[in-house]
Image 1 (tube, rainbow, N blue to C red):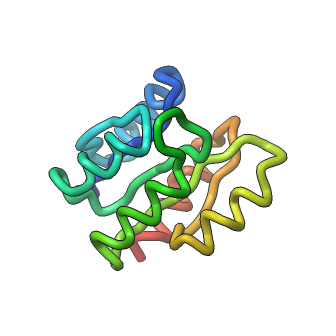
Image 2: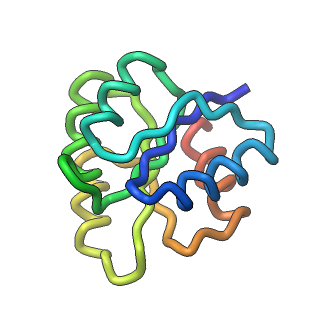
Length: 119
């Protein structure tokens, strides 16, 4: 079972992603509400995939991607962004994110991005 870490500052978004993942046979090993917690949880849980929000308090998703990639260059991170954040998405891809999905999420797009990331 593929282990996934969900990172988003909005609890309802984490709940929505968790619901999509669990219904499709993925195991959610943790949830973080900011980049600092995301990096800590990544090191502890070593998930196979991370869904990462871009805009969060304390540490944004792009900085978190950089820190996770520094710790684990093989990490697979999928950015989650709202519409109109294209420049941030490009920054995230340059930082090492594998893919991005746009909010509001479509379940099939979330699953497709994760399956593509894990190969």
